Length: 254
Length: 254
Image 1 (cartoon, rainbow over the protein chains, first blue to last red):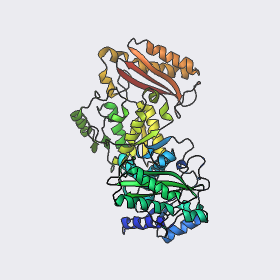
Image 2 (tube, helix red, strand yellow):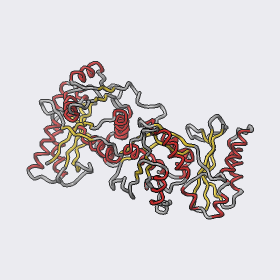
Image 3 (cartoon, chains in turn brown, green):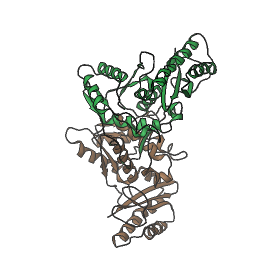
Image 4 (cartoon, one colour):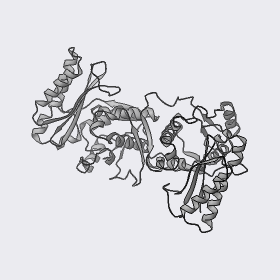
């Protein structure tokens, strides 16, 4: 969606690794109206076109695909790609229609760009899982590469939405990472109860007076279904508002 | 879906024309469980594997793709392609879920086979319209070619399901074509009322005692929405049961 930052640079770096000598790295930038719920920040979403373009040029991107406005959609569009299981929880519960928009635009971009490999960040863990599922279910011949979340020095996950935060919110937003590390630490030292673990995470986040929790959940990292007891491959996922800005983050429990 | 007959041969012939000297013609045969409603003829649908294979060989097909059973689907599949406008009428009303199954499997086959061109018959006029819409909306780089309905000598549209008909049903099934020609004739001689036109078609079909009408509708051939008054590019579409066998046919009004 553009407003490129250092996490995108990491995606490009990994894409370049996979492209090798003879492959090309393409970046698509498209603020996809279909994945914004009514009344959300579609209009306000940053679109720094010049800077993004320079960013791509400096990063050695071979091809920048940046359709304008709603160019990708016909007015009488009526076909959607819908994932109906992984999409029902976490972000999908808070943002109905969001993943239908994501799947549809990613399928379109795949068909337009026809990549061999596509690179997604783990910050949007659920999106990554859903894209993988879509690729599998619809037989796209595309390797999906996951890139670990890139963070600011103080641990905040890089996100184009971070720029919405006013100074005090930005300061307090570091609580997300701290809370997730606290959860991982508890699991690492033997805590197995989802209830106790998520309570501790909530409590930690609650220490930031400007934080308003949307969800804190312990889920199976494969199915994304809520679990009661920590197991191999569990994920703690959080969504928290600071003012009007909604941030997400997650951590895998070893 | 196999059980190949002379209309499929025509599809193959047209595909060959488009493939040219250096292209290859691929046929996919897959009785797609997803497009059969519960309780319909999925189990009974004919699967004459040997004959179909010989048919393809004799027709000069280069590649036969015939996944077995439910091979194309994972047990925990959760991604579907859904067309939500053209799919709501005609067959979609009578067979809920049918076109979701069609779109999903066609998207999968497109991704597996990666054709430049795909050929569909006009007997399944709505399916053709929906596939075109899907290709447009999801940016598949595939030309969709429509092939006029191939008919038996007595006018019955070729269909794998015709073989279900017992002799007397088969005889009476010719009424579909007659009724549609009657409708086209009325329109050609100035009738513009959908009500009167479809009544006449229904009445004609009613002359066959074994016919049980599912629907007779006048629709816009682009949008497939019902219309009250005949216009340029109108379509009369019918679905009629003979015993348990459901037949469809259609005619474009000039």
